[in-house]
Image 1: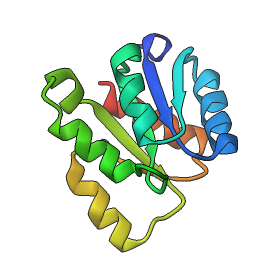
Image 2 (image 1 turned 180 degrees about the horizontal axis):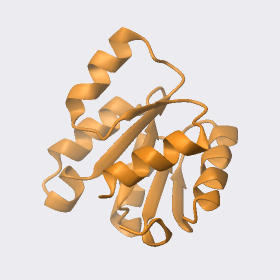
Image 3 (image 1 turned 45 degrees about the vertical axis):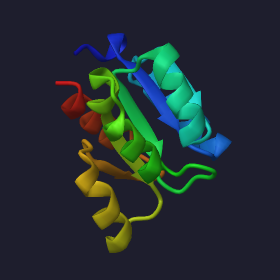
Length: 127
């Protein structure tokens, strides 16, 4: 998929990080971007925005990224339960990675994401 046509949902409770990621996505030529501050807001945005890919933080409240992805995977709509997801987190601990990786995602990016890493992970997910 051409990155210029990609629709990406960015989920992060840190406004500075959301802005940082959105600005980097725009540098990659991606213009169709929606943001959410937590998993609850992201679930609502899924229906209206219909993203091609979700970039989500893990540690958020009231619903963290792990629970958000679990709810996606359990959703009755096949377009939602098969959504492509990339985790982003400053937490690269073994325990967090062990919780995150079995959820069927397209990777894990340690924050703050480097532009090249973001581009490579997105391109791989949207092939």
